[in-house]
Length: 280
Image (cartoon, rainbow, N blue to C red; front, side, top):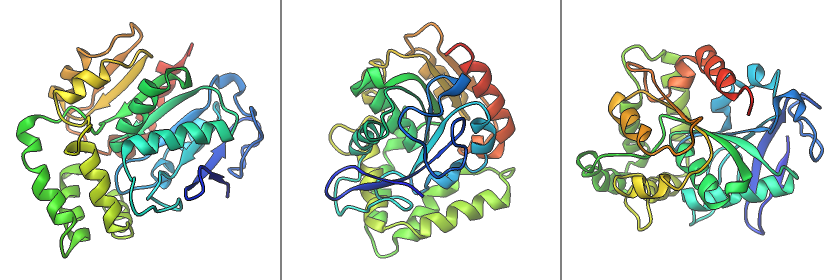
């Protein structure tokens, strides 16, 4: 499986499927756009990896080139001692696309990945034709954020994986399939603890973090491309509607779903995404 050398210390694992090769073992520069337009770049959430897209890649790759990547500190990619932040992850993705000779993508991100692709769209606007965020890790209220310092302390404490599992409980509902719960628990326990703590802190409490309002409002209003945002929480869905600038942007709410709504409802997610992407 392919790896991309991002710097002297960082290499990223990724898969590359869809028109052109369709083998998951990588495509040559510029191949695979096919009738689907720009490639899809799939970006997973906190404590997960690109296997999170196993529910979707086959369906999406029928029409699109699909690049699914493990972010730094996650999965099969390099694990630096420091720098495991959404900002650094977005820069990694920009370099990855340079390495693949891909000028423009439709960037799709879940949870923390929603932050990462939003940063990519703001800092490198020519790189992102359209943006899709799935229950993204931004727009948190100050009330909710009051609990984050304690969570970060627990992630740096004696039992970091148990702390991560406790944080992860809010990601599911009584209707979440057991296989999804187990899948993510196993990945959390395989994560380097310092990455879990640093990435969580960088999302929400560190200087420059964009996960909590009003910092979310100020930063995300800078996105100029069309955005499709799918939420489980109607309140945060309504909030993001007020930030979107492009007339083709759309906010969808699947109230009652868990945080990993695209895993719980994979066929519906693909159908909504494909419908929105037509003409892009």
